[in-house]
Image (cartoon, rainbow, N blue to C red; front, side, top):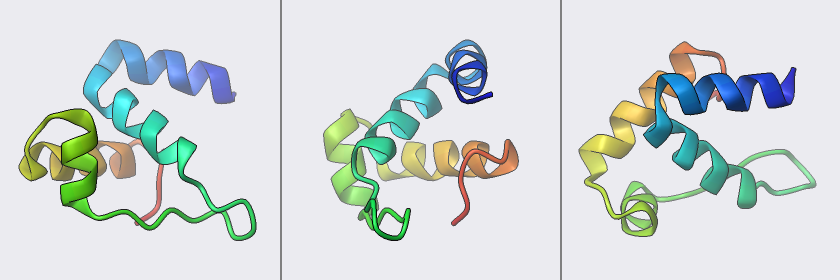
Length: 67
């Protein structure tokens, strides 16, 4: 199901898929959480913090992440 989710994300919202990949790279293996500042994420992906918020909302709505 994991790769299917990635493929669906890439097709439906490529930007959110990029954010998902950055978050995945920074997961704490001990607790499964990611702590990341929106500004850090926007700098990493060269987008605005508003875009990050939109992508986070999309990922939440599609059960890809829990905030």
